[in-house]
Image (cartoon, rainbow, N blue to C red):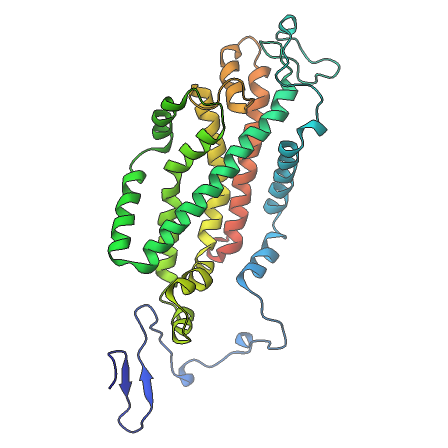
Length: 328
């Protein structure tokens, strides 16, 4: 007895396994496709993985080098702000309001008499922390939802996809403003992180769902099933690693977007409280001084722009390395 995917040849007793959907391959006759010398494979070379090829490509890309140096510097400033300034960012001396640069204060003072340079340095910790924490939660939660929906399909895919569509219809910034109005008394950065993650996971879920749908019908998954591997093991051991490339690209570019979102919420007065030093809060406080003393607004805006640009550049470099078709 044979199933629908197996046939027996008329002249022999050989079993021929028919390919599953998505595994069909066309093989042209040898005499119609003569093998050229340039198509030969050097079997003496050690085989490399997609990730190794991507790393070789990235480390030769000037965009990756520049963005990597910028991100490394930003992370050092965010983790060790005391190495760059000894001034307390919350110490303000009102008589020094809007004073220019001086000894130990290279960027001058804001309207409250706080050191601008110290607030820019310590603001990096808040903004980068919100961006990284939000990205991690979004990637984990959205990745799990998308992977389960794409791999198992059926009613689970239908339910998760409809939930995803509901959240996808809500603009992230608008939804965050509405939800954060209920937590204005909280001073923790976790309220901003969780709210941004609440409305940001849908894009990751949709992308990894599509990648899993493509990867689950490939030959390596069929071979693993034939060797006795369980579906859950196949999902996390074979399918998900082969579907991660577009998610990694999205993660590197989205991190900058979450930093901008946090700054926007703080600028609108619904994000972090004024007691927490952040670039968005300083930009909000300095908006009324644009004509009087624009440098108070310029420095936190410049730090925010450089940070976001660095992560976007890193995302472009990773995209070029993992997707050869996107290279010019």
